[in-house]
Image (tube, rainbow over all chains, first blue to last red):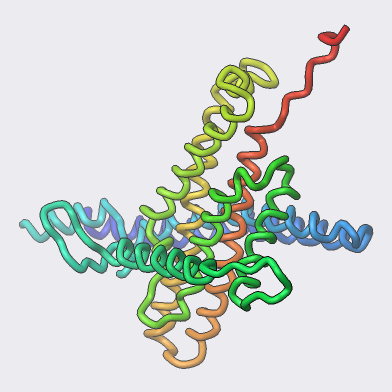
Length: 93
Length: 229
């Protein structure tokens, strides 16, 4: 198995694993955040604007973890420096 | 694969290039500036006012109220900076209605620039509020061991601001591009609507986070107990 194949396999598998494992945590965290926000909205409806705003800010912070994993996955697939290097070597040969 | 509007280059000379990001950014600035100028040419303070003036008043007072709710004492001082952040990111996402347009916030350069603006503005507002010594002393709270962690948290939240906005915008356009090659009729419209929604939410998140960072930096320090009397 030459280095081109190795780099390709590693990149693709890692890209898939990154986004797969990286979305589990944020999804669970966001579910808990929304559930808690809903129950506190039910308890205190007149604090609705504060709760909603804090909920959105918290969701954005949790979402950023998933976004980081997505960005790494995209880099591995579309802007992979190791793949570019290996392709340049193969083209130069 | 078309990752960002940076890939569309209109003109290049040496290392200077005019790409789609710059062109769309300037287009947005033109629309916002010229539109506001046209609307505010004849402001009226009476009961009769134009629809556009009403719209602008709703937007400006809404942003001012949000800033005050987060805890900044005099929102009009920060309204220019935070309002511009929100309006720029919001209109950048709103104009995806126009065909052939790509949001310039889908390029890491634009979001990094906006995040660096926030990174520079937070110490500026903090020093303006509590003086250079007072602001720097805040890095030593609660203990001086926290100094490296406070600095790292400053840098990492700037990076997080940039990557969050970039990731959200880029993923929206990328999903659209991929779906256009698969099912070119109904699904891209639904995904475009979802992209609009996330764009608005991300604009709100970006400006609210900038507000929270500025509020944290300009919080009036309570006098330590024992100093009075």
